[in-house]
Structures are given as structure tokens and as C-alpha cells.
Amino acid sequence: MGNIKLQDKRQGTYLNQQIQSGDFTSFMLFVGQTGIGKMDSALEFAASVLCDNVSGEPCQMCSNCKLVVSGNHPDLLQVGGEGTIKIASIRELQKSLYLKPYQAKHKVAIIRDSHLMTEESANAMLKVLEEPPENCIIILTSPDKKLLPGTVVSRSQIVNFGTVILQKTEDNEEIFVDAVNILKKSQFYEKMAMAQKYSKEKPLTVDFLNALEGILREAILGENDLNSDYSERKIISVLELVEKSREYLKNNLSGKFVLENLIINLG
Image 1 (cartoon, helix red, strand yellow):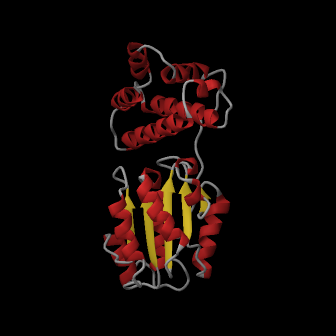
Image 2 (cartoon, one colour; image 1 turned 90 degrees about the horizontal axis):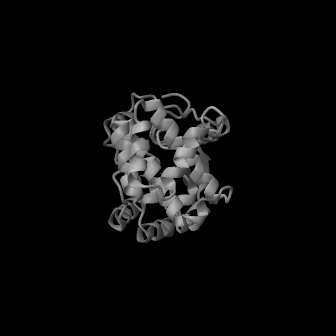
């Protein structure tokens, strides 16, 4: 698998230093845009931690590496990735984390899309962070730390994978105007017409989603007037819809379906 590579080389170095030294951070939050590589790097990091190879690089030959590849390693725990993360899943994870590792020297837990934890789930997870189990590494992934409770974020080491935000220029100003119109109270038929307009080619759909995200993130920072129509909670929920739209595109659903579904869920 080799060294972990991130857009921000400092973060890649940080993870690789842990692997080389064997001195691991107990809780990490991998943040960044959907599809940017958070989950792949989390799995690669887990494989390096669990491998018998003391040099820190997965040998892909030992029983630990083979179990990771097959998806059956008893010390690699995964939760999330299928919508809302309910408290039953977190409680089951808790039980497993407080048991000694079965085969490797450590346990690694990955909570994918951790921002989709319910309030009860997040509170249960917080108890784990406050009373850390020995020899465990917990990795949460989320598109943005703002989507998680501050109490969880403050106890985690942030590993930032970055976000590709479309910068507004004279050449793409129309995309931003249309993105604002979709977020504002335009007529439904007008919004669907824009969905048709930006679904003709996948790169155009991606640019439109990036423009939406840029506007929403500026709104959170108070850099535009979207707050007059949207509360912070609403902005965060729409950001989640944008991230889900990217997932749909990644799974080869049509741009037309992706944008129409987004507009319908915007209400």
C-alpha cells in the first residue's frame, strides 16, 4: 500500500510518522469533500496499524493484511456509510472497543459519515472519547467538522483532506447566479430548468455542485446574505444534500437525476 498520500502533504506526513513510530493518536477526524479519499486513507492507515511488519508499511503477506483485504479482520471495526448512524450501532461498537484486540496489537474503528450520527449516537460516542479504551484508534470521517457537535470535534485530531471549491470568475459567474437562484425562493419550474441546464455533462454538474458548496460555506462564515433565508442548521442540512449528490454522481447516477433529486429535497 505504501505511504498514505493526501492533498495536504503535512497531513500525509503526520499519518506516516505515526505508522513509523508506533505512537498513535487515539481519535482522529478526517474531514474533506466527498470523494476526495478520506475513507481510502482511513483503510490504508488501518492496514498499516494492524500489519505484523514492524517497519510500518503493510506487507500484504501476513495474516493481518490478508484479513484486512478480505474485509474480515476482527480488529478493524467499521460503522456508517449507509445513512443515519443509530445509537444501537455505536453501543455495539463500544462493547467491541473495550475488549482486548483479538489478533493484532491494536483495534481500529472507522466511523464513516460520522456527521450522520443521531444526537443519542453522538453522546454515546462522546463517552468513548472521554474514557478512551486502551490500544484503540478511532477515525471519524465527515465532509466538514461543522457538521459534528463541538464536544466531539474538540476531542479529535483533525486531518484535513481539503475541499475543492469553485472560485467565482467572470467566465463562470452565471453558474453562481443560478446556484443562488436555486437556493433562494425561485419557482419550482425554474429550478428544474436549471437542473436540466447543468446536467448535460458531468463536469458541468460537478461545477454546479461546487458553486453551491462555495455559496453555502460563505454563508456559514457570514460572507454573503444567504443567512436571511437560511438558518445555520438549514445551511448544514443543504451541505449534506450536496455531499450526497456527489456520492450519487460517483455511483454513476445521471446528472439529471442528481440535480432534480437535490431540488426536490430542497423543498
